[in-house]
Image (cartoon, rainbow, N blue to C red; front, side, top):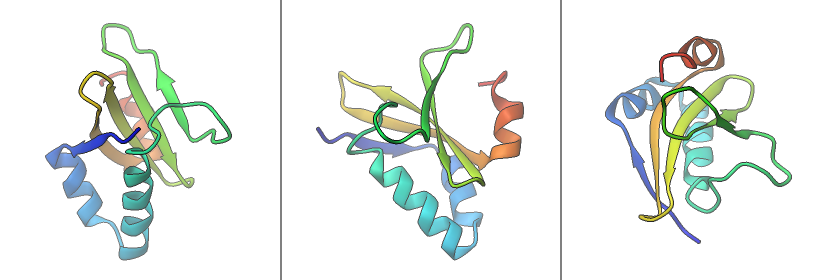
Length: 97
């Protein structure tokens, strides 16, 4: 089951600002979401976030450095990448997304 990937402009800007090696790693992990965006299974890098007043939001840890926030629209078969940031900043963002 393949999902179309959409990436918000700010997330794309952050991705472009990364060093080449990090950019490639984060981009590869984002592309992998098109095949299987849901948490569970062998990988513990994806998790559903339960934030009051928000639609279901997911996060993907990339290594120990970056976090990708995304939503899954099952009916449209779309994964929308909302933000990419450092893990430290991500923990501060949980309350704002």
